[in-house]
Image 1 (cartoon, rainbow, N blue to C red):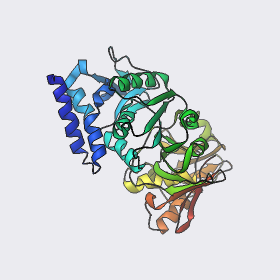
Image 2: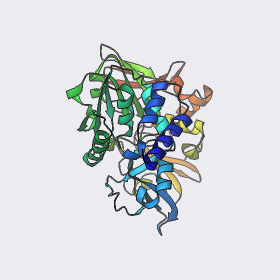
Image 3: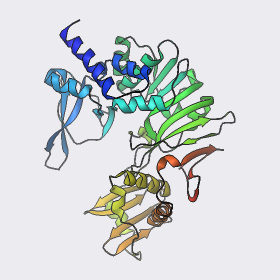
Image 4: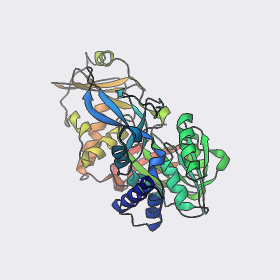
Length: 391
């Protein structure tokens, strides 16, 4: 065994140890899968900013800085591998200025946590939504061995091509397909488990239809206010599904077709509220940016109350915009001015009032129920905290 190979074996073992996994099978999978084979390079914040204030991202590869690359790859860290859907030539990578991350290798502890929370077991037929780099897929293949079937779909063909090469070179042979994961993947259905490595605004009907009775779906719910919550659903034989939101403050990139739409010119939206009568606010809009655990939960609940709203800034002033209904709420020195058919801030404040009065129950005390096409998140003991997910 070469010195280089010995290094990566040691690093894998150290990573498995740091993750402190109770499940021996998952611990052994982390120790066996060479994460570096799935991440030929990644982008790191250089600490520099462009003239426009945009982040300058520097590429990190084995050729550029082997020690830095390996240290990052075998740390419990999410690594950005793609911006704006553009595939990087990691043999000749260049710095990037700004851009939106569109693919990453999720931190290993979260990857394993997702598989473990979904209760993946030997002999199951599994569908992964979002192959990404292929590392998560490799862990599932390593964990199940020949006892189960793993199918993974990826909407980005270039991403899947790279992931497929790494998987097959490492000896793993899952079923792979370029496909929009929001439609599941009918050829290999039905599934015992569907696990999504992206977030969705609502649970796709195709996932319900492709899950065996008693099977489970694990996904992250998100929206345009960037609130997040994971949910674990059990599908019944009548097609309904029900299950709890799970603990933790995590986020996943949105399914690409469900990403936040461009709202247009904020000044145009602000003009809609010029003649609106202001009212004082009971809650500061800064609560939407609170980085505490309560803030994380409060933002998700605000998103449930105003499911099509997004937050923008114009000249440093916060503004809510709902492109679906033409509603907006602008925050000024004299309070909030609202326009359109939906009073966005009224809905959010009413939800926060109910949550505060209930002593701010944690998100993992809520449940999601799906019946006859209606998806509703509710708190069992607080009727006022009940919300329909967007269609």
